[in-house]
Length: 116
Length: 115
Image (cartoon, rainbow over all chains, first blue to last red; front, side, top):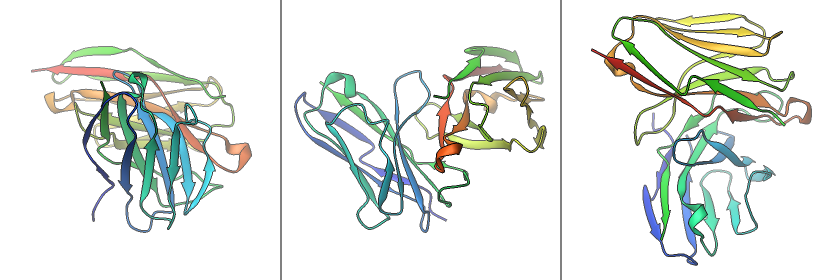
């Protein structure tokens, strides 16, 4: 079946612009995660949704970052007033289970954000 | 919070040799340890995982071992092939006591398999 998809694949933003990154999880997956991957580093957790509920946003680096999943399916990560340090690959992952048991996470291809 | 360390950062082997990548973790409550392979510009792909109720798991040429007492786990690739060349990430679950678990990743190992 279809895997996790993300759009756009590449985004160039001027410093100060707002951006919106989209994630389409695997159909029926309850859990959705956003990660930030800096060049040469492992993915770092940003936020987690179980269906439409955002249960953990402890990894969001500042209040310029906002994520939503209003209908429990597609999710959007929004970054306001982008800064150069926001340049990274933003990865989305989904898994079939909810809390209490950790299930396999499947990643999307990521969105490479470059802030100039 | 959980801290995952991964070694080595780079590993070069000849085709047919074995490769071993090691990770340590700090959260004694961690109970899930996946390994991901990431080729340049591609998504991380889950290649194998292990849960804390077993000590070893194999899948063809790859295997993972877990030592809960020492809090370390390792990825073993036998009979390496050039297509195994990629960056490999280990991860450990954390947050078990909160009812919600997430993954903390290591910094990655770049594996190069030369023909």
